[in-house]
Image (cartoon, rainbow, N blue to C red):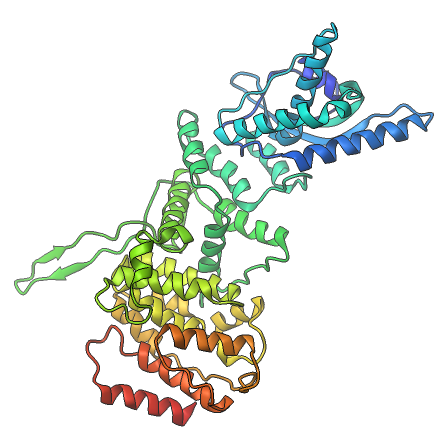
Length: 511
């Protein structure tokens, strides 16, 4: 590993003069920001903190006999062998903010007849440009007094310069920098854009930024890849963001291989009586659990699943919101299957309280189903998955906590049931074999518990009469029986009333 370390002031770094390292190697080159870096996102809060810390430093300095500088921390640079430029790998948020402060100070100095300092960084990202405009406006209107005392010669930093881009990112991925903390998607973005040919990096950097916030879909993908029977791994709690970040970086960054952009779809083949065969069109898209290669493969994979999530599983996914909301809540008579799905997802799933951890598993299951079967019987799949995945909401006396979802998946590998299925009906068969009981605890008539509200909301949505006078045990039995009677027959053709009655009676007897 070829690494050079040097201490310098911000003034030295901005001056473009050579800086001597600890082992007497000269560091020289133009500071640049690689296209694959995340946009500039520091805002008013981070600027205020930086200026406040600097003012506190000046106050301490005034009461001290020592001459020391305000320490900015380390900045990681990769020196390109091609053009000698110093690519900023870690520190761009701090350096850009300080460059804006220096720029505003130079305007003040210029107006006062003083020679302005010169330093420039350019951003092509529209998000970065808008943030820079906002920050300059804030500095002009609110921060001028604070930057009057700004002195780049009194700001010290440590430069870590590597000759290898990979070495630079190994340092980068272990940094715990202040300000806007790096998320898993921020880190894997750099990992995959670096794996792409340089002449294509700008194109894919723009493609990545157009995807927006990838944290929701990345969270769902990690759940889908971790929660499997043969290779089960614990999904870190959201209360441990550093472990979440590590899981994302490992699964969708470091563990990816080298190779082509491959989508592992399923290919349907029908054999003819004469021995011939008909190959039907392969599934379009990627398998959620498929192996991934660095670069374009993983970027396309993430883009594909983010498009699915955006289309089907967000508040923006109601393509025809008004017409869907005009339809009846329950069976949506006369509505198409896709409208039925959107109605069910938006008007029930998204409205249920106290179900965020359950919904995380539910959304992951839907992504796997849609990636395998598209919109085939999606409305049916949504209801059958609901019956299984939301069962802990009523079968557990306590609130459904994050770790209990992991335990539920270990005992009931619902995601494996989907991935092991070759047709929607095969998937439905797996789901229909699942049985649950509704616990009557917290369902007493005089209690307005979260569990009771959940049951009433589901029954009301399904247009099933809610009888307020039922005892806790009767209400528990009724919920199980009615939900089974409504959902189990779906996808299996027309069901007579005698079968529905039988399902309900079984639920009452065994509930």
